[in-house]
Each structure stands twice: as structure tokens, then as C-alpha cells.
Amino acid sequence: MTSIADIEFTADGTGLGDLFEAVPSLTCEMESVIASQGHGLWLSGPSQEMIDDALATSSAIDEYSLINSDDDRWLYDIEFTPETVNVFELVIEEGGTVLSASASNGTWLLSVRVLERDHVSSLYDRLTEDSVSPTIVRLFDLESESNSQCGLTARQYETLVAAIDHGYFEIPREVSMQELSEELDISHQALSERLRRAYRALVTSELNVTEDAPITEPMPSD
Image 1 (cartoon, rainbow, N blue to C red):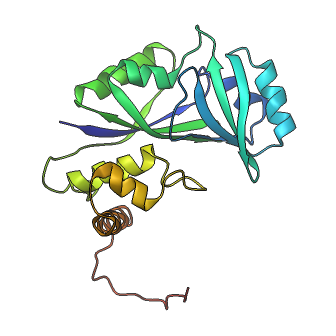
Image 2 (image 1 turned 180 degrees about the horizontal axis):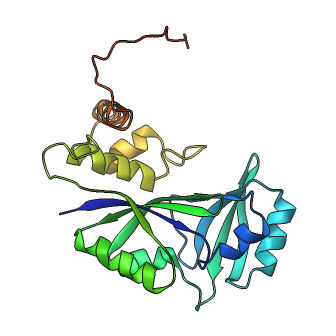
């Protein structure tokens, strides 16, 4: 059964450990699509000059190149050296998919999808063997038809994953709702309604509220 695991670990000993040591204010977010030769990572926090200096002096990074920029963050394609602990590749080797990855204050948080719960245990063991100290923050199974522990149906979950994979939530968006609906072979209206229901399910689940909970403060107008 498909499972989702949120895994937290420090960047020490990983491919970006040197960067966080050089520039502690660095924040990092994985691009929705990973490049074939490296990894697309949005870096922000310090200046671009400081980031470039840290990349150039890192012993764990083999090659890097600037792809894009957005306000005060920069998208780099980064390729690690062969001997570096590459967490992203470990996930793939253990049959998983990285749904999202972000880091700040030298700590990574990965959301990983696996086909079997046992794969999470294997991934945990691999990370531990490579001197990465992982913590399983959350682990839940996705049921095929009923609501999962995060409140999503299988179709809602699959739709959100497709939206992430195609860059729908990127700024700016990499795909329109019309294009995404065509990709999923559903109508624009059906996609809109499914996304709204998924948003509602996630919010009520994560904030631990019910849909009929009273509003104690006036809502600001748009």
C-alpha cells in the first residue's frame, strides 16, 4: 500500500552540509522537477555572491550552474560528487519519490512517497548507515478509496501530486489549470472542484478543525 513519510534530518554529512556551514542563513527548496544530471534547488537567504562562493568552495559539489532567479532566490542545477551522501538518490534507490524537500537552519524536511511501508524502514536504515540521523516526523498510508490520514481521497491525492509534478504551485505557474485538466483527462470544472475539496481536506486535517467550527473572529475581505 502506498505510504507517505515526512523525514527530518540535519544537513551535516549530506551534499549541502558545507553550504549550511558556510552560510547558516541559507534556505533551500527542491524544484518540482529534478534535472537529469543534477538537482534543481532554489537557494535563498544570503546574497547571491555569498551563495556562489559557498558553492565554489564546497567539496561535496562537483558542478553547479545558475538556471533562473525569482526575487531574492536563485535556482541552481547542482551535481554532487560521487562519494557524497546524496539523499535524493537514496530515496530513488529505495523505490521512493521525493514529493517535496526544503531546508533551513541546517535541517532538511523531505516528504517521500513509497509503494510499500517497508521501503521507509529500508530508507531509514540506509540514511543511518551513511551517518545521517533521520527522524520520521509523520508516516501514513493512502487508502485506495476511503480518506487517508491526511483527509484526502486517492483521486484528490493523485491530483495534488500531478499538480506539484507539473509545476502548478510554482511562482509563476509552469502549467495552467486548463493544461493540467487536459493532462489528467478531466474537465476544467472537475479539476477546480477536486482541488478545492483537497485544499479543504488538508486544511481541516492539519489545523485540526471541523467544517462547522465557529468563526470567532471576523474574516477580512479580499
